Length: 467
Image (tube, rainbow, N blue to C red; front, side):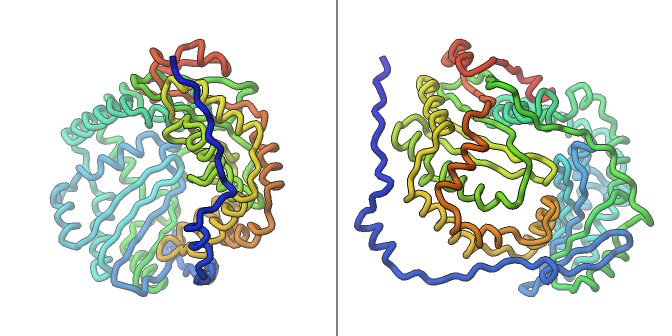
């Protein structure tokens, strides 16, 4: 029989002599530095495109980005097409020739498609800025189909798909996306295997040729002023007189079940992994300081309530955490995720331990104090620099903000206390129906165990991955 677990008392309020001596050391005061987007970002135009720039005064390197507000939700072909490009050439140069040319310029490019954002990145020495930009523009505008290269890419993609089905982290990601959005969700919004097999090189190349015609913002970090950079970009960047509208994006809507449910995927292992998933209230920038404090207090790191209770006191997990997260854009709701990775024979005990914390939030003034200090010191030493300024601005825009919201958190954090955390927990977390996402072996975690917590749905790989 499994021995009973005896919880160890957690002496959160105690301090060793060594810790006291460390805390007694004088602090070197560090003043926080906030961004002022109007001051820190230079602006210009290159044809119809906005150019945002931060000048690099440290060295002669540049980083140039084309940022599109489109991604795989607009076209499932886009992630495949952007991978395909590296194997393509033009009438005048082969793919190998382009690779060598970029190497000789000490430059490179990448295209990173997301669900609703795609970013082209070109970087290198400023002295080769024009040549590197021209090389990328020529490749994208003039690449030609290569059937042999496409067949090779299809083979690699199929192998990657097979490997993903053997990856427990990928399986869990699919369960979480299913929990947040339902059967049709961003995780499985991919080409089916039949669609991949029937993919034509001409369709991918047509999408690449048209990429420069879609609306995008140009971001520049380099030695030149925005005026000089915009002038060069306008001369070399193949911009249309008017941008083409994006393909219509597929809509995914987050929703919550009316009662607790369980999503399960079988995976042959002795461990069991559980995520508690819930979509929360609408995004509100005014709540950010409270959320920061709540996360630090409850689930953030080794000093948080979750780690201290479930792992340190009760030994119910090899890893555990919880966090309340803001969405990537203001139109989406916040969401909450809690996690426990445990042994399969501790499955029920681990769930009970987390549910106890989700129901009643323990009080520790010491952890509140430590959480406030962690946030304050982190913000005081945090420096957003270089092209990070540009991406901070774009992220703020997606949240409906025109300012650096770290400043508000810093100004508010000392005014918040346990009562604020408790109210937030009661309003957002306590007694709410969650979706349990479970990855474990069905030989070790039985249906009867799972059904104790809600309606059980078993998901196979095709439903999870979309192929």
